[in-house]
View 1 (tube, rainbow, N blue to C red):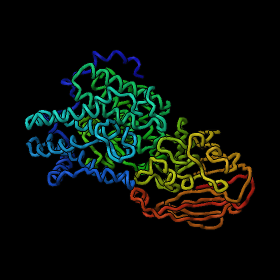
View 2 (cartoon, rainbow, N blue to C red; view 1 turned 90 degrees about the horizontal axis):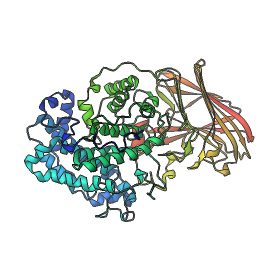
View 3 (tube, rainbow, N blue to C red; view 1 turned 60 degrees about the vertical axis):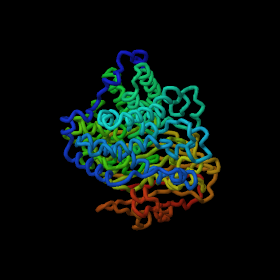
View 4 (tube, rainbow, N blue to C red; view 1 turned 90 degrees about the vertical axis):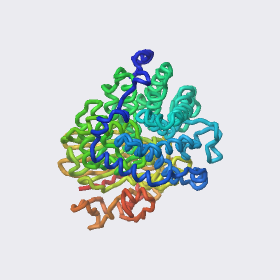
Length: 623
């Protein structure tokens, strides 16, 4: 997509002194027009930070991830420091009275003094540090947070340079030195970071092309645009960013399906938009690929997987209500000239707002675009969902009864068990009624050292036993790309949306399964969803069970009929009592992330096969 631009950028990349995407502190009239409610939030947070000391980042806190698996304590302080800098900077730009300048200078100095900007959780990727738990001085690595911190400091440098220079030119020099040494120089000189996907890199094994690539590149593009004064380096840096982005874009199919789920779309597709926006601005509009269909579909994915309101189809490491940047969604729609996507983002933004108080909200392109770009002030209008979405590239199928959240919705996935942020969940589905969850994907808990390590599948939320898939001869699905679904048919018309896949290969040979065809069918005339399992086994040891994770405890109304309360409505779950026997397990949630998503309890409904037949068919119907 960038092919026509390579080799032609020299005359189009804007010089550092002329790069002016948003107002600096000197442009008082523009800062005066920031929305009153946003000014109030920024000032309130800035005042709170003025009254509190800068929290130290201790070596002992960094080591907690290595010693006890806790990464959260360090990350919380880490992001408060960066949020502090962001809010103080914006408050000074709004007020312009110098009240925040000293505090800004202090936190800049503190961040530049940090021994490393690398997350403890990413330390295992840094050479010579894998076994010591702390970053070794002299080693250089660019992870997500190194790039993000570099971009934050670059934006602060851009908007406040004259103010900081009036205090001491040493402050802006310190910013420039830190960003150059930790971000720009290693990026221009190195090709062996795995997320670059360079043909010479030997460190890509075990990694997937994922959000790391655009997330890092979107931030590096800001570092180069604001901080790099050498024109030749600016050009080569932007070309290198475009080259690596090409690999990321080519990883996607034309349907735009994101196998990382909606929680990571903001740092996958959303960060792609950020990178494209910076590149577009730093080339004065010359590089523009928003019209490309794949770029459009990557953006549209996030609307397609919305259930209704702020709920999303939460396959992979996602929760049903993920933290979502709705102005970003609207900006994507605006960029690709898709009014439906733009109004979807605007509607949810006006309903749920934009949380600048969140410590992960840092000064950068997204925040500046939110404050100054006109699209956020547009009136939202109605939008509609497609009745059926089929992302063949990632084998995700979504069917709705209506073009809004009324009625039934089912989302099912085939895929394989080595996806990015993988859960063992081939053939898994979720079901909602009027926007209320019936069959759920529990999601992911607080990240620990286990989450992305060898013990990932010791975590119960990653196991197929706690997804809506069968246990076959007492065996669960296994992780690995070879454990996968085979798509048999997708049938779509006005009245019926149907997805059929064989999930037998998702199980180990010990499961003795020859065929397990799962047919998920939404019938709009009958107002039903059916889950039909047609199976053939080499042997049946009597331990074949259908599992359904639910939010509400199912109630046995009569043999073959269970009910689930759906707000003020009762939904029935119908099955053959001569085939299946019911068992319900209560699962008390203790992880704070899961409790925040679902409350204190979820339920594991097990429909156990009575017969030991080697072949058969069972059907469960929601009505």
